[in-house]
Length: 352
Image 1 (cartoon, rainbow, N blue to C red):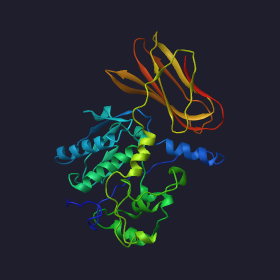
Image 2: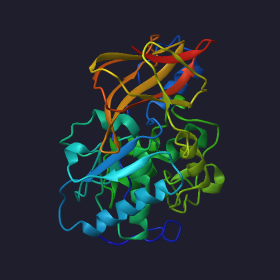
Image 3: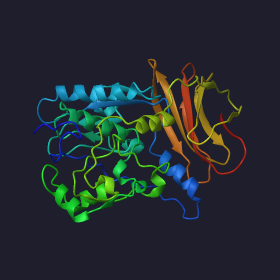
Image 4: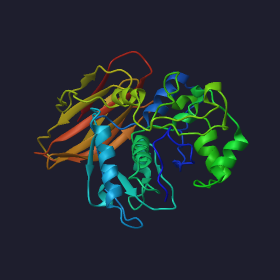
């Protein structure tokens, strides 16, 4: 595999990420657009405070130096001050993020919480080329961005890109990508549903933006000579991820059985709560109010929070409910992230 220079310094063709398809939830057409967007954008994101465990699966050849780049890239994301934690584990079956180094399979990652729907025997991320080059480091940051819930930036409908489509098909149909037309369409030419993006701007410097050589873009005119992002985390990348995963949040509020606790949070906001049951039995944990939320329960095991169960009520005009057996003397953490509040009034959480 040849080495690739830092983006913007070379116009040599580069291998591109081929992200797996991401299905949108089936929401009623009668639902207001603002609520649809809040649900669709939020459903790829993790609840803040989540510990994402990652493990390396077997790949072809020696991959120790490749693994080091991935570890460094996870740390680079974490060093932004994100409210997420990344922990390497040895067993892929214990990991939400399972990373392979299979040459010939390209580089890709599932988007955000989509990884939870993938069998524990399968990869959720792969690196198909050398990561020890500057472009390889960019690739690692890019794929982790997908796992955090970020789509491809050049597919943002707000970019206003008009492609020379046949030139794009020809370019990506040749080496080093050798993509069939459908893969090119899915990863480049297909524009994201407007409900999948936030704000009104396109970020050409994003880590999620591909480099494109001259001759592929018809307009905007300033990009006819190509797009050459720096290959690093952009200011907007950082702002966006910190808005979803702010660090330094206050500790959880203790819940008492049969006592509802108000949640004074707005869209993207999150309430964190703690349960220390006095008796071992089956409990119900639920939310109240006209809201779309995801409710997640963790158990503390050896100082680490382990996922137990979750319920996403978004778009269903109901409240989230989880039934679990909880054990006396153990500590549990409940996290509720708000997508949208579709009626005025106070929302709350309770267990009983």
